[in-house]
Length: 469
Image (cartoon, rainbow, N blue to C red; front, top):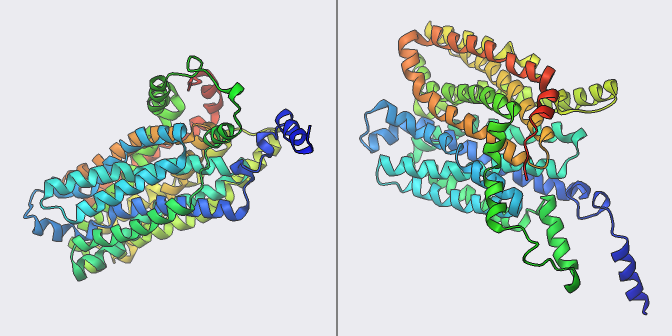
């Protein structure tokens, strides 16, 4: 027997453990991880950017389509967010079946096509349909991205990387109106979407050529096929039925939502928090023009207060999340996902303070800088509520993190899409002061939920262990 043959036999007899294998995404070089995570974060930024970039241009779109019904024009923004509820239910579990890369590319192609369709829409009805479908596919990277991060980043560093990832998700809706206002004013609302299409085209090319597959089972299957010898092949009778595997994957997010109190409870909590974000975004286009005389071009600047608050909170949490996790792990001699929920305590007062002051100062037309500053408190409160719960879901359901995030996305996006439609009647009935005060009181009440999960989450996870396979 040749030396080469003996070497191959030894390798077959003593395979490298997956934890030590260079193909394991956890063992990739920092450069390769940075490229992958950079593309994933960019994809997660572009979808929220498109969700709000049309906000300042809504009056121009309304005039172009001769649309006078207020609920319909509110739907122009919220329908895209409503699409976030449906796409991830299919795309996220498929990424756990076929891998992350192919689903990222499919999402990119579909969103690019429907962005172009939105730019060329002949009427308001077709525009709304195109926006809904585009949002459905665009939401894929926001949920699959969390699973991709879990694939590559160990638990001890996950909080820092997730903070970078969510910077894009929360800055996108803030930066969108700033850009969109100037574009719509200068060259028309349709060019908002043509420019988005160009940007998406470039990102799609980057994703296709430079994004590597990170899903562990998909990589392992690919490696196994290359090493497989004829004697090792699995018979057709031994292979699981394709329909069974596909159905099991597609129903996983809903089984998690309805079978786990943890997933259901945090989904409802995140739904309200996320709904506040888009409710405020849609009201900005009414409050600042009517109360302070902002024009279309500078209306987007009103969103910067919330953006600054989000960024400051993300910077703090990027350090705090992993620090708290490390401290509590050392203190108790072991780690558990519930440690991620503790930073929520800091955000509980910020959200209602921001809502109260923003509402009353806007109602009494206090100088415009005051409500904008206090929307920063609201933004920080949103981040302190949102990010710890998302990292918790990833740590608790690492292998099926994408499905867990998809489950939360369903409820969150339905509320995020519908609450802004209810916002205008709310403010018409109660005014900006009492309307936002009511939202603040509700935020205080529901903040009890994550604290209960901090205390009882481990017991609930063990008692209601969802069977994924």
